[in-house]
Amino acid sequence: MDVALLLLLPLVGGYYLANSSYAFRYRSAREDGHRLYFKSAFLGVILFCAALIIRSQFLGIFEWYRSFEVFLSQLILPLVKEPEKGYQFPLAVISLYSMILGPLLGYGGNFFLNRDTWLSRALKYSDLERLLNTAAHRKTPVCLTMANNKVYVGFVVASVDPTRDLKSLGILPVISGYRDGGTGKITFTTDYRPIYKLQEKGTHDAQLPLQHLKAADFEIILPTDKIHSCNMFDFTAYNQFNKKVDDDTG
Image 1 (cartoon, one colour):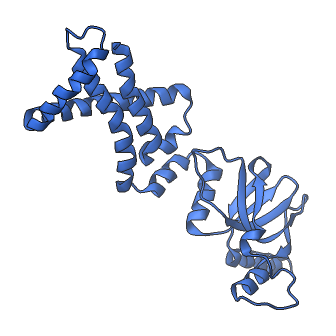
Image 2 (cartoon, rainbow, N blue to C red):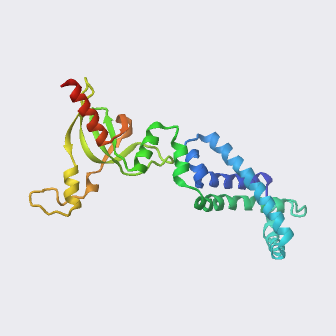
């Protein structure tokens, strides 16, 4: 068994840790190939040292573990190139433990980590994703102006996942309209709120032709490369600002 091959095992463990733990996976998704390689190597070194310490402690404390390593050596030593030297066996065991520790610490450590905290840290360098994640977490609507000056105000359907490219965005519209290309003023033309309220009450008004639809059926998928502007939207603030403008111009 080649030493270089054995040293790949901690690297695999480091890769699993970097891609499974909340503390690393969201940042790792935004890093290119060589940065991810060096991060995996760095974490692999830490795992190797941890495995070395754990093995030495177990050898000194537990008799059953020393018996286990005798059994393990009978399986591993035939695979090494020079079994008579025997020095590759401790390296093989420690490297194997390093690989196993990667996913164990990654997935197991997530029980003690706050996902939203690490997600927010990973998104702080992307303005759009940071705002969308904040809006989804607060359950606050956002106002999106598209390339064709169409305007949508609605709730973000799902929180942003930095491990995936944000090519499209799903929103549940509340109101929609258009923005004047000259003045930039928004004119709303469609209000979805009355329909949602009727559906929430379970009304079966014969005059409502959309009673067969659910609120989720109105979800709109928008391409992110066509979004010209995005901001969180508050109806109270919007009405207050527009009232002030009308009073000033009246």
